[in-house]
Amino acid sequence: MRLRSVALALCLLGTLAAVAADRNWQTGTVTAMERQRIREGSTSTSNSDGSAKDRGNRTDYSQNSTTTKTDNYENYQVYTIQSGDTVYSASEHLLFPWSKPANVTLGKPMKFAVEKGSMYLLDEDGKQHKASIISTALKQ
Image (cartoon, rainbow, N blue to C red; front, side, top):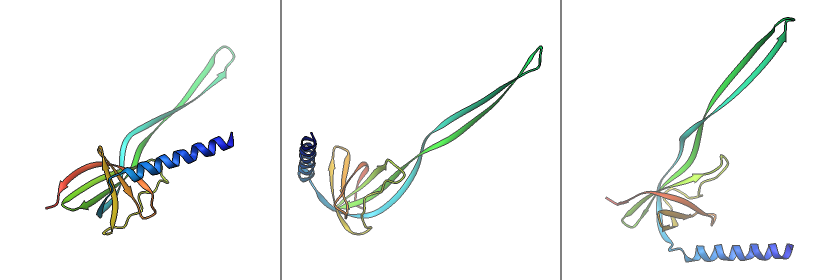
């Protein structure tokens, strides 16, 4: 069973490497980077406590209720990349608070690929990061 799991993992890694090799990699320069926190809704939480006191011929009831509203924020890293006469803006969604954006240096060349509205960034550590293309413009 363990051997089968290892073989499956190696096969999956081979497939991912083949997909990465098939991308149409281009070279561009990072001209701007910005971290954005965007509010994407809120969550309300309610808590109620109740008590009853027996007073002989009657019962007194009391209740306390607390409602807390928490804003939900999502983190994004926005990249501006210039390649030839085209300028791309792409946004990488950082899913967790501890997620790290692509390790790229402002003003240095980097590799990227554009596929169906998405951009794949190859950072300085050799890791691929997927970002959504926000806009494409011609260099002025």
